[in-house]
Image (cartoon, helix red, strand yellow):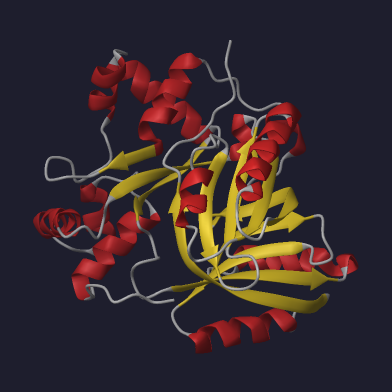
Length: 321
């Protein structure tokens, strides 16, 4: 639930929200959007980094465009005396995120793999970890379709998804470099293309051209300040939704369009959808659920509190020849 943190209000919050929404824009563009002097936007950005409110910038990719076709939500029942279980999960390359939950299953991991073999290998590694836990209980929920992540709807053009863009080694080197970018007193903004070029020993025009291409192809969806929501006046919930699939289109449309829904997955279970939802208060959560039940086809829901979310900070791209 909500943590005790430094409150950010007024112009500081406005700049922070813009960087949390889209840090691909320059500070000049953000200053124009906010009708705020560039110098003030610059000072506020430096302050946000100095105070640790912005700890880095995360690039959000469309996993389908990267060939990551096999995804699942893995649930684990653990004991409070077993914090090492969570740390062990991050040693597995295909684990992208780990969530701490309320309820019987206290951990949930999001895993993404490029092929069936790596998917099965990842599940095997997870089984070995949980076999050493006190409860030895786990549950794997296969993701049939990803509709939305980090608040961004995914394109589901069948032709595009069956034939993702061809990325070469230099493209993947750039993606790995920008996936998670830590900030400090010397770097308060995402890494510029000139610096990426120096790091990778690639010409700056080539880096710029490749980034532009991957954005236009939908490989790169956004670059956002981290943390976007968790530490600042937001509560998160994992909501399982049981639906009459004859009306699933209406449910999906509602959830994709609702800005409280950060991630949305279609899964192969009795509760066919899993949504990660953020609200400012419990009252806001109740309002969201009330609206959800007004959508034709919603039969039942089950809600868990998401106490925390941690990103692995790496992404396991498919191999490129």
